[in-house]
Image (cartoon, rainbow, N blue to C red; front, side):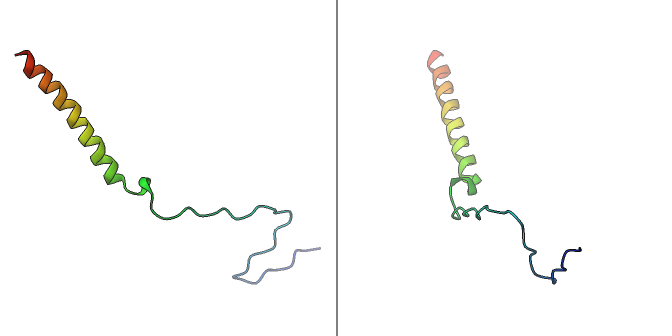
Length: 60
């Protein structure tokens, strides 16, 4: 016995599928703005560098 043909544009039935569709997460969020994280890393790096420059200047 052959499987029945499914018309184009339709999804064939699936046997034994009990999974539910997962929920999509909302748009936005912190990980969708990498520029913000880049600037945060740059600012912290400059602050740490400024601390060491100030320590070095105080020794002179």
